[in-house]
Length: 203
Image 1 (cartoon, rainbow, N blue to C red):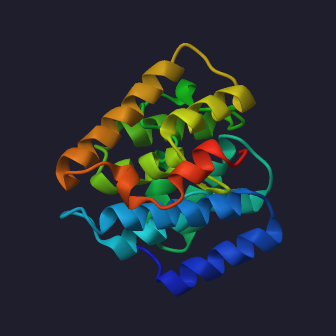
Image 2 (cartoon, rainbow, N blue to C red; image 1 turned 135 degrees about the vertical axis):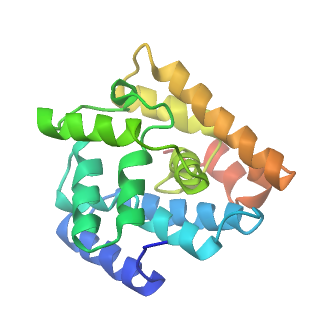
Image 3 (cartoon, one colour; image 1 turned 45 degrees about the vertical axis):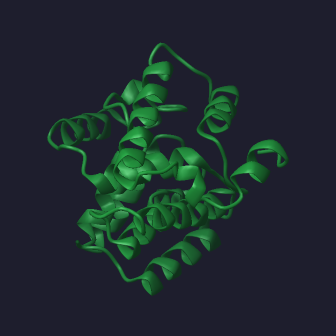
């Protein structure tokens, strides 16, 4: 796959933090760690690639505080660097349900960008890497990994919910079930800190 090295990914995230510091940086790191921990037990996933994709899935936030716009900013940034597979994850990670109206937050993209994202998502079938980062993005806060249910409620309280929110949650649970069928165990067994971050830490 066309992705940067781990060293370059870390450099890009560090540069992004300098440009736009915020909780997204720790969230990205925990997403990467969760992706690698699951990938180690999955026959079809390279743990190093999973880590890199998780590390950079939110790299569009380097451009400042935005909502949906961060996915297109990340896509453009990594595409310009020649990392098409990594850029793809920037677009797909927010949409376990292929519908832009399911996004948790404000749609701050322009009409041309919205049209591009819609056509892009319609034109692909999600890979195991797309679904892995969708899952791990939903599992992680800036403090670590927690139960999906906690993350879903936190996001709904912070960003609101609509008629597609439950469908998006169901799609994410289906991804979780799919991974657990392959690895033969609960993903939570592979993710340190779940109990602490779910029941003790505030988000």
